[in-house]
Image (cartoon, rainbow over all chains, first blue to last red; front, side, top):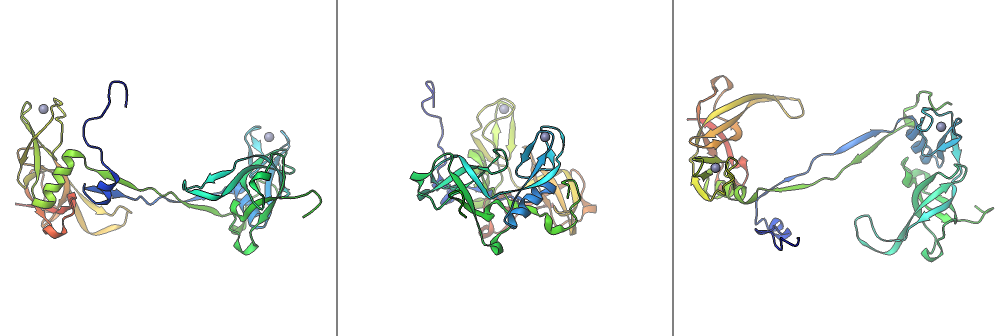
Length: 172
Length: 157
Ligand SMILES: [Zn+2]
Ligand SMILES: [Zn+2]
């Protein structure tokens, strides 16, 4: 409300009025199924994930790795030059410790979304989750490695990587 | 392989399937609530009267759109009216052919301002003309839910 208006006239509807069908209403549930044609760049990126690889492209003009792979460099306005196959290791650029889930539910065990700079990409990050780590021990700059789902469970999606776990250089 | 080479194997690309969950509820407002309750409970079509404009609105509404007066006088306007305009629909929403064409009509209830968009029944398209008198045919009380479809259709009278 405001200084002038302390209360609006009328009676507001409550959730219960709808649930107990005290008022008449119509319901609407549109069918919003879609299929997005991923195209050459993203298509190969997703297919790469199914095969346990992180696929990008390189533009030789601006010397940039584009990740996820795109067919076109939007900086140089030209077609990219080659595919690049990146390692599934990287560095935590930033992270968050989330005690709230995607449905706004409370989480006992927090999820740790993080931006992970993929090795060999010159600092391109992808959003993902950290795992096998105590939230207290997560640091920016931490080295992490992808934990993939078993091959038969992969669907060609970013969730084919379960999460990223800390790793020491020189170990697997 | 260059990024511009055509993809020749269909398993190298896949569409991304998704679904956006959207659900809406629409309540009819103060006047709409009473208008549809009357149809549901009493099989009556009600209008509201603006005395300064000398108009009766159907469907009933809370305010006069000409003079902005609040409308508080409700009247039973009967179930008879005239075909104001109509169209014969031969296709379903998905573009498939309807076996029996549906006649969609805007029916203006006698003595009122406004109209109800509905279907005509008990009549063939060749008999329909603009201006023919029609009356509402209601569903049985047990089947009425407080919807405009509580009226089955309008038929010539
Ligand atoms: Zn470039
Ligand atoms: Zn008026």
